[in-house]
Image 1 (cartoon, rainbow, N blue to C red):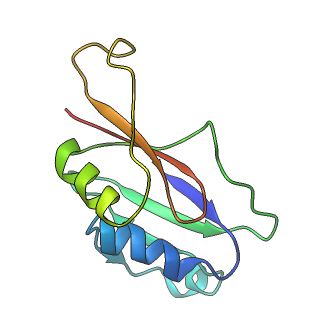
Image 2 (cartoon, one colour):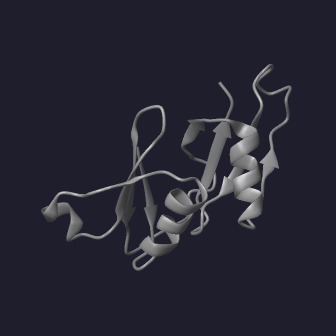
Length: 113
């Protein structure tokens, strides 16, 4: 899946997705690397591609959702100073989940399996 960031925000995205979440950065093919952005391997499968947009707008409603150990990820996110907004458990019974914002304001969801 792909999310966007503004020009020059790659290091902030690396600090969050690579540093806080501990996801490995993947090398981009040379022609795509010239466009900026960065890619990450999502534990359990999949990739997150961060693309640069000149007219960037934060994704406030649409969002990726990742199945994780929610307690560990919530602790890491909170420890990094980002907000952890727990979802109403009645919305998806039996599934704990929370939302946060990445460094450029994109909404991201983390939920337990």
